[in-house]
Image 1: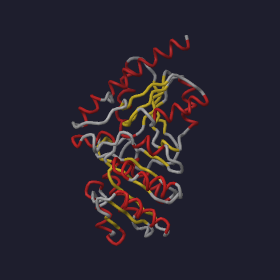
Image 2 (image 1 turned 90 degrees about the vertical axis):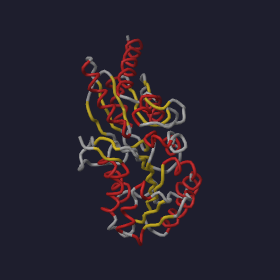
Image 3 (image 1 turned 45 degrees about the vertical axis):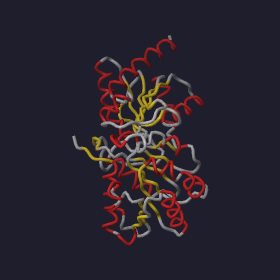
Image 4 (image 1 turned 60 degrees about the vertical axis):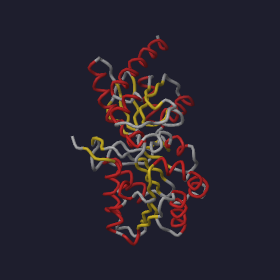
Length: 316
């Protein structure tokens, strides 16, 4: 199985689409880490390093959007969403400007850098702001396809969350990416696993383990958190009557909250969450952190079996 990080795919696809002269790329002095350095080398006249000044990063991006450019601004996810939130909310989103924020090093995958660099609440923050699209790709191919779609074919603010971690390639290079659409990875009848981001790999392994135990689990990849694919969610809620969400974000305000909002309004069913339970991150390897925060395939299996028992009690 091939592995690649979301940020690496991002760097490569920027060069690919960079022939469009409206595209300008901005970075906050971490271009080697975000991989925007690839674009800087190919198109230096359209690359701007604003220094360690994230608020300025997004402010300049907004100005370039007003001038008709397509600015793509990058830094680590925790810095983009926490340090520059005022610029994102009041300048970019309030004015509905065509700025693409591609934030790398999201979630726990920053590893040893610890809590100060681990954004475990960025999905929650960004989906609460009006006018912005929120995308969390599952692998390198989906990251590349999402970036192409967001930059070339969508007008308006977009937040794309990428990992530092090299994760397995799970989707096809030529898969069509449509903003707001989920993808069914596998069908099932006992429960539905809804995953977003790089934890899809763990969800796939968990589904295989559940199958060995006689459990038929549907698996839905939800790369766009906002707008959310209500039709897919409600369809599988009605079919399986139990949903478990899987995300590398706090339980509060992220995928679990988004899916719960849809279900509670239209078709309530039992729902449980694999997520970070209202805690900050900490320093450690990605493997150790996944175990500590209960994000592994074993945790998904255990929670799924618990959910099935709850479903049986409710519907018996």
